[in-house]
Image 1 (spheres, rainbow, N blue to C red):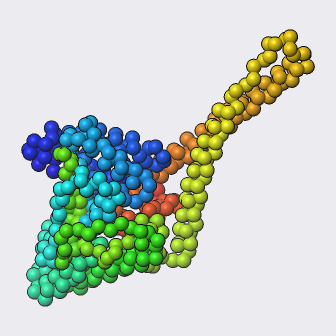
Image 2: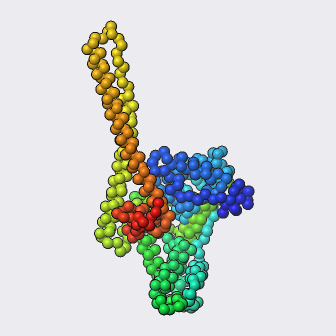
Image 3: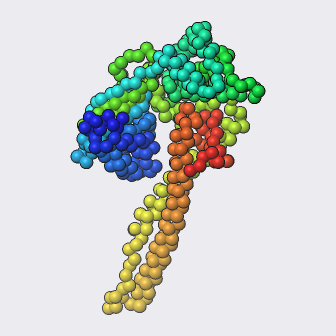
Length: 419
């Protein structure tokens, strides 16, 4: 990607700086702007690739990052000096573009990557299996299985949450693991059978339909569903493609991924990630414990905000108390008793200031301690998202001994998550 722009003469290097919304958005007020500027400075003369850019449409801090990005791309420091690419699914990028009117003019160029056709899906699936050693894949040439597979891949590619090649590779791995597990140790060659292929493709179809219905149901009841900005886009599609779009601002470029056309109007995605539905097969006990741990996490967030507010008020109070009355020097107008009273007041004021200083030191210690924990948790959340275990991208909730996704299905132990 970087080499293309280097050869075109736009850039001085082919280096690509890859980041996500997490790298742009701060954790507290005033942090987002500097983080965004720092990332832009790092990408000067290079390609800045912002993956899953649609997440910049979710939340106040994310909107602040978009506003900062729009502002910076026209400043002399950054204009004409880097290529910026916003990547994501078409419907999500359209929603992002509607957040700030200046985005569309700064990213006018769009590159759309079409979805794989059912024939291409089957070809890739077959190719992946045939690369395995000692695996007999002759059944895949069967015309009846081929026709059935094409029909199933057509149904899969028509779903909103279909991931094209990524999901095909996932499917191939599941089929291969099943074949390995069911082959006796004494048998030299492993054989792909029709039942295994059909069973796993059907299972993926059922899972994706269930996931899609859960998200749509939740968003339908969410207030955000009625307030999410919608943008009509240019090309009607018969096949829902995951795509990428590129928009260019001076040599700044933005990439966007076109998604399958959602049922209009498309509800906002935020509610489903904050309060996802209970996954199928999760026991009452597991779900109840997950809700308790989620409530504990929210309590800790509220405690952190309360601490910040308390610290801010205490600093203001301390500033108002630092004016200590001086010892009186006017011996002609004040008797000894008055001077003693003024001195007592001065000492009392000084003691109060010292007590407030001690309180501020304790608040600062607690703030740093809580901030360190929050930073560590943010790193864990970032790594968990990169691991891609939860296909819905739900938030992860800390539990005893590890982390569980907010839907309840996926679990990662502390040992597996090495920070």
